[in-house]
Length: 105
Image (cartoon, rainbow, N blue to C red; front, top):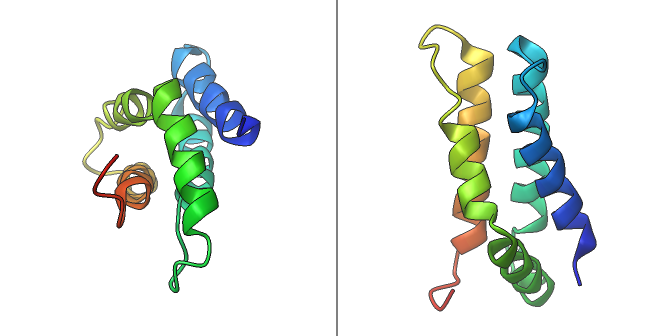
């Protein structure tokens, strides 16, 4: 059903599996993918998108989004690179939005 989120997860998984994608480009890809995931899973400040966001989250979880995002998080090794750290923050923001106000998932 929600093919868009699956395509983003496939992009993220491909980025993680691509050994030639390194450095700032790799982290830019991770950051952008995590940002898209975070935004489409957000129910809205007034919960106006809760129904569709919940459907997207269910599709993403069934596809392995949690494992993919955690694998992206494991890529972080440099304590001195703020861009990498920003991407890690975006990963965790995506995870937060996936489970924000969704206690039954």
